[in-house]
Length: 283
View 1: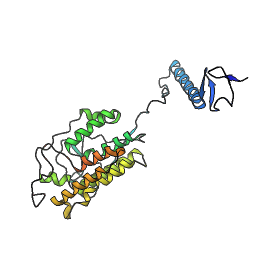
View 2 (view 1 turned 120 degrees about the horizontal axis):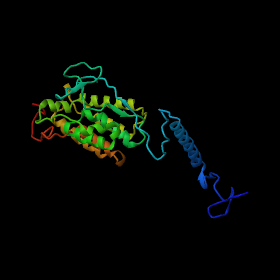
View 3 (view 1 turned 30 degrees about the vertical axis):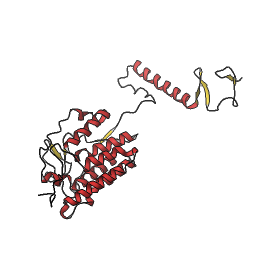
View 4 (view 1 turned 135 degrees about the horizontal axis):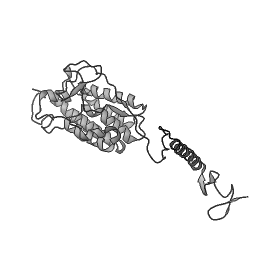
């Protein structure tokens, strides 16, 4: 006997899609019926375990419309070739395996050494990249980016909301300029990005990740002998950064912002390099 559809008409293979079945008093797809049966069984098992006094009941079924808990894994790091002498940071610690020396790459103790495993969307991918780059940024930019992560990814980076980031520099010095315009800093950042990628378990981090790696590597193209960047080269460098960021499409515009934060850091103490004419960038 043919079943009735919603309008009371006979339902058969010619009048209704084959993918639909009658279940629980309504027409549903076969996938919906399968999901409903599975959830009913899981719900029954959960209730039975509670009734039996089980102290470790199974996790209730997760609705397909909710996200699964975010799993994290540590980002392991090793010092890159060369040196990256950062300014004194209250409570700073060296990377695991690094020698306790003044020129050893350092990360602040407040840095959350975590990466979202198997990111399921572009926002989670961006959060991983942003957090990996965080230790290499200027203090003021660190605060801004950490606040974004704490607000939008509380499960992993929520502690940034109550973090003491230390004191920002009060004046521009030659050592500060050399630090932020050194190829060692770029190597340090690239190392963090690669370690983060490994920790996240992602084979493909997306076009934004590749774009940012190219942007971070720009410093290497404008440093002369001894790893120093002259004033003329600095002007060319800033122009190259602006050009590259301008090429970032809408889909990876956020990575363009990260590229600017890394290459053109801003300090409340003043510009990293002033416009005052000088034959040398550093005194």
